[in-house]
Length: 184
Image (cartoon, rainbow, N blue to C red):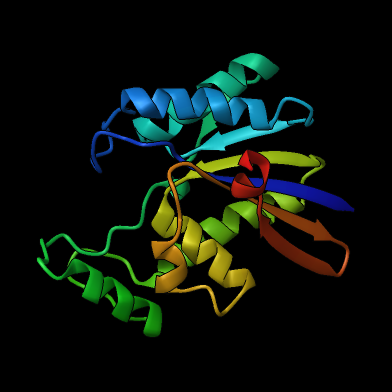
């Protein structure tokens, strides 16, 4: 068993709302992202239902003639239903205490569990090359599942877009960031 799960963070967007579209630059990034997968086999694409995530992967889906499946478990983590002027401080605290939960939000562990659930489904499937498209917060929690040192500072260094390859073998899982390597 050898699985390649490509974890894609959406391209530059106009905002954080579920219906926020990509910017003009973001649409260009989506085309560039498609080029990354030119020589790669893709069996399935699963995306957050948020518009910016779907728009990010549409060029790749068209090129490979694949349907984009959406899954609400890939949507961004909601830190809180309240507005926090110091939201980054609150977010950092939630990486230090994964059970910390603000009003109307989900804890880090709750959000992590929902994205890990999708990855585990993909690992147990017959598919070998899967693309998951999501958001920075939820992706950082998935990577933290595989690397406990991945936290707030690593989240801050994510780019739009960004791509990681999670390679799962029989008794071993490892991930690496491939977006910057490919672009250089």
